[in-house]
Length: 541
Image 1 (cartoon, helix red, strand yellow):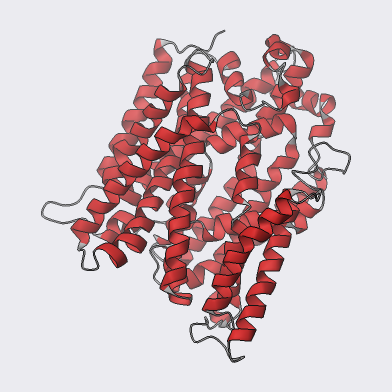
Image 2 (spheres, rainbow, N blue to C red; image 1 turned 180 degrees about the horizontal axis):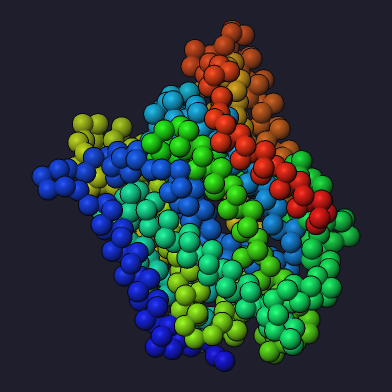
């Protein structure tokens, strides 16, 4: 079996592309004579129900980073990398209960807008520019590169020659509906995308399990990989594990991973924007709870395939020993595409590649929409055209999407061959995320935090993070993130107390018990999720 598509695969993939573009354009249409408003374009008119919010959150989150990067880490590290997913599930519940009520009450379009209301315009602008740069130069470029690399492995020659054409194709696909439709097109197509990526991911896992043992049974295949690679099924790594520096044992549960997750799920524009577009706070919280349950199953479709590929490498199944002969160098990110190329049959291959493309395209569309939202609402409107109407704001938003996509596509191929791309992205995002998280946490929950404290803290966090990273100190990067967060919070407290009068800041947020009250359905979901996570960690400790 080779990696080439057959006619049936092309038909299935073509149908998927037509459905996504068609649905995206249909749901974002405006009635004759009506003009699309900024709220329509950037927040889907605040009409999203809980199930669309939950599906869109996961579709925005799961991309080539997970399917390709996390599978590669599954090959190298094992199930321990799933902590990013399972701890994210718990983080989502915390975000829904303690962060979201404040954001929705403020009527926000963007996360930088919260910074302006809580602190001042200067800090908001600094963070807005930072986020635009992060989305364009890190997030969009990495998703495009990994997506192009995956499709080159599955559909191309596998030698990298087709990466650029595939990246351009993915970029045009995402632009085809997101440029015109805005968040409505992105969110509603995400409902289809998340169903497809879960089904396609499960199909790949089951087929791979069928091929890992001679009897071709998925259950015996799972038992086999448990036996052969039992060391890959521990969530908490020991100090002698070569990957301990990436996932430092018990510190994963009580340390820096909380920084990564709280920053990503609580203060990331392209994630939280879906919740801001909800019909109501209760609807947003239910949607986030739904997303949390989906996160629990994600390792089954993105981590387990990497472990299966590792077992095949160990046993040289289907020549895997040769394919992964450079595994010792850490180049594992082609594990997932290799499984699809070699084991998924005709017809299903079209479905699985459509699922992989869905993950990539939905994330691209989400990042593009959020980049446009921040630029339009936080840069263009306040600094370039304060009197811009809806038509101008939507037009600028669309132009921003095109420019961001062009720049990211032009730069994506410079990413090169980076081992364990998922870990790489987490590590280098971790240089800046602790300082930003500290500002938000202190701004939300400590009323004495003032503007000077926030600005000095966020600026000081960068040299602190770099010092911990590059000084001759052997410290896992997740620990570096935790210590950077703590030091930054201490700086914020010190500066705020020394520059203020000891009173609450005039922009401090009143924290009333009723603000954090949640409904019965959300509470039941949260308790069930907590029990599931405790059981999973107890089994795979």
